[in-house]
Structure formats: C-alpha cells, structure tokens
Length: 57
Image 1: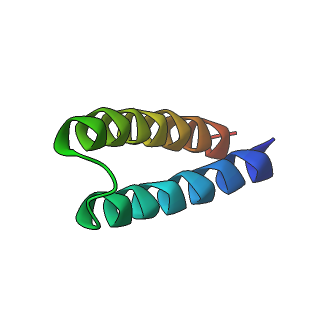
Image 2: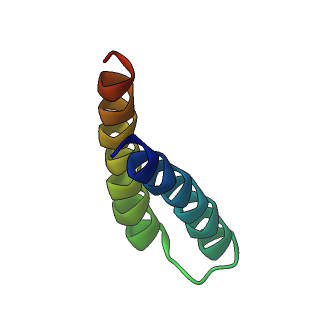
C-alpha cells in the first residue's frame, strides 16, 4: 500500500509540473489553471498525509 501511495505522490508531482507548463504555454487560461492546480495541490496534501500516516506504523 505504501509503495502505491508513493507512486501516486510522484505522479501527482509530475502532473503539477505539466499543468505549470500548459499554463505558461497558454494552453490553459488563468481560470482553468487555478481550478486544476488547486485540485492537484489538494490531492498532494491528501497523499502526503496518507504516506506520513503509514510511515508511523
């Protein structure tokens, strides 16, 4: 389980990178960017909390 969460965390970080690239390339407008990056950051918080919780055991 821990391994899969770490993979998900890595993939979410990469997704955040690509969202930034799309925004800087004007593929996403500011409204789209704000919405998507907000969701991505929220997912990162959840994954980090889950990984940290599992690391306590």
